[in-house]
Amino acid sequence: MALDSIDRNPPPFFRQGLSALSKLVLFGLLSVLLMAADHRLGLSQPVRSVVSVVLSPVQWLSLLPQRAGAALQDYFKGVDQARDEARQYQARTIAQAQRLQQAEQLLQENQHLRELLELRKDTAGPTKAVQVLYETADPYTRSIVIDMGALSGIAPGSAVVDVAGVVGQVTRVYPLSSEVTLLTDRDQSIPVLNARTGQRYLAMGDPLTLGGSLELRFVPASADLQEGDLLTTSGIDGVYPAGLQVGRIRQIDRRIDTAFAKVHATPMAQARGRHMLVLAPVSDWPQRPSKAEPAPRVRPGRSNPTPAKAPAGGSSGDTP
Amino acid sequence: MIMPAGRPLLLPVNPRFIVATLFLALLLNMLLGLMGQNWLPDVLAMVLVFWTIHQPRRVGMFTAFVLGVAMDVHASALLGQHALAYVGMSYLASMMHRRVLWFPVREQPLQLLPLFVAAGVIAWLVRLVTHDAWPQWPQLLAPLLQTALWPVCSHVLLAPQRRPVERDDIRPL
Image 1 (cartoon, each protein chain N blue to C red):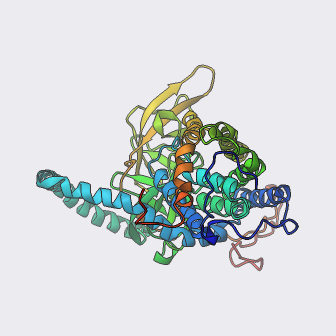
Image 2: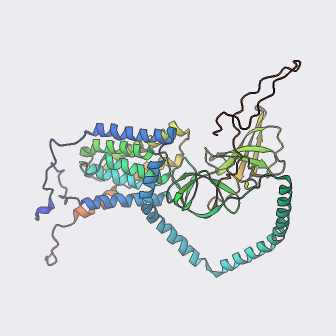
Image 3: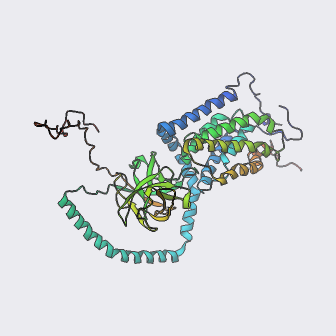
């Protein structure tokens, strides 16, 4: 029998390193520290970025079978389906042409009116077309990972939309990829506007009801809402541009025992789309007003009132 | 080392093989994660426990911690959640590594079930404490599947150590 068939060096008797228990305590504490840094302090982004860059080749490898499968499927889908799709798109283009012309006209009219009123323009910021790499496997969060990151100019907080409507928001940015939290995530919220009535509401993610939906919170039971109402972004948050479609109201539950209605809406965005658009956050937000000193109160009856100080250009610091 | 009776003497393990299998398990775990089903077995945990039991001097809690952090970043879970679960699991495995190997392969899974369950429970507890999120029932299936797949894992990972030492092509039998 050859000599290399057995372990020639015996296990060390004295140089055993740390004991198992102390290792457990050490690494356990390290994990807890990481969790605290991630959850409470928000300090974990550098660690995540580094690990994500190191992992990216592995992730790329693990995505290969999926890509190969998708390519095969595409190949075998056949000409018929492609022709069908082309026909559908043609029909849709014709249907949209008329609206497009109207929109063109409305846009010009709108621009003209806005210029007249000297309103801020709803400038659409730069957009980036991205592809979805994968849905994250963590069962407690709803998010997807897209194929562009800080190196491509993705900023945290950007809104992400697909053909049908708002998908979610970029919450973590790594150098080569970024993470988008879907609207149905438990921690995600979006201000919406009922397109029919013009009422504004706050929609929070609810991953459990209706297989992932949005819940409108703080809605009075008497509110004018109907099933099928379209919800769009209201644009007052400075994150989502106004007018993007968010969802449709699916379920309204008015109860006697509370003054609020339980309203659920289903998101418009397709659950498993591949191509999406990242919109840069709306940045032409007005400056925060500088802190004005409270004007001395003047009693109405007294003569010779002191003039109130002008708030603008005050000597107090104008840092936002 | 005292060997259980009737077992073949194994060749020493190739460290490169350990690294390769851990890497493959990470890859496979990522691939299974793409399916979006949370009852699929955690292959990385199985391979990690296997090497912790068979090669406690080479693979231990440090490896478990590093791989756990990698899984956390990939799954965009809470950073440290998988790491804590894997470290705990690895600790339990290193506590029982002398005992488990005395049992035949078909009886080992029963010893390992509490270990996989513990890893799942740690992850659940962490999310319950920090996130107020309740785990889903299908997740219970993952530790059971890992336990059921243990003999397969064991056979595959021990195969290179069971090869004959010297290939003799002109042997009469």
